[in-house]
Image 1 (cartoon, rainbow, N blue to C red):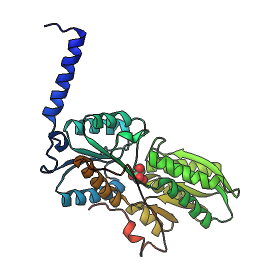
Image 2 (tube, rainbow, N blue to C red):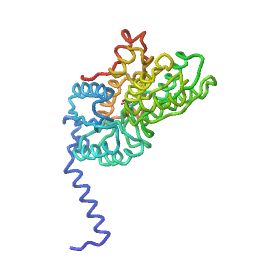
Image 3 (tube, protein in one colour):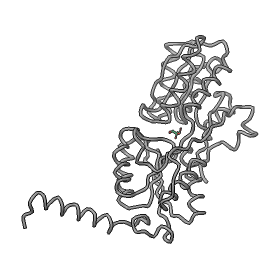
Image 4 (tube, protein in one colour):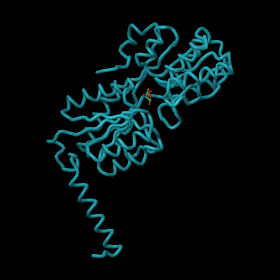
Length: 326
Ligand code: T6T
């Protein structure tokens, strides 16, 4: 039978609605939210990064105590071209909610909006997208505040001022961009400091080390580097050590993975801005479960950070060290 364009549209609409209902394992779609085991998916920014491992620990514990199932996946690199296919296949498996750290503000917008439009609750953890209005909740550290704190730490370590540089990941990573903005705000407002700008290491410690070596070859009098995440910080410390400038260049890194903590203890890095990934994960599950049940959610939740130094790493700072396993 040949359908007129109008009938073809109506038929396509009915088919789409039927397949959504038929494929849905979602409690929200089936109306059994109170009885069925909620089905959650967690998509990390990158697999193996202790920040997301620690977040997974919080998510697993919260899901277990709520009787929810949890399926965790993450791309091998912090890369939207690798994360998007994971989102698409997870969405096709029809979980009730996806808890995700999007790897790029622009590239992950459409796939996540499509998942939400298909009836899956979406909760953003850590990173966000350009327009997160479709998400039930977005939970992240005070990244801008953390970046400003990093500048204040460098100023305390080098009170006389001088040239400062930032090593970040990639533009479009909302968290790192906010940290850079916070650092820049502090550095530009202080006339004793000369802000050399930001360079991008693509989440690769070797690239971060190479950038720092090149920057020190050009400006041998750099006094401080702010490294905006785990991998940037690891590489920055290597670059400064290779240049033999540990006594001159103060390093403040975001995050507190085991390798960064070792660098802090070794005296190559002077301060770390640690996040609370476990708490972000726990709150992510709480918000996802509320959304599934149709209860009101908190659209935006901000979590804190803690500055770790050689003075507090064996004391109150120790609890902030990220985990390699749960
Ligand atoms: O800094 C964290 C995270 O907050 C950021 O969005 C991406 O990098 C990390 O995972 C650390 O590697």
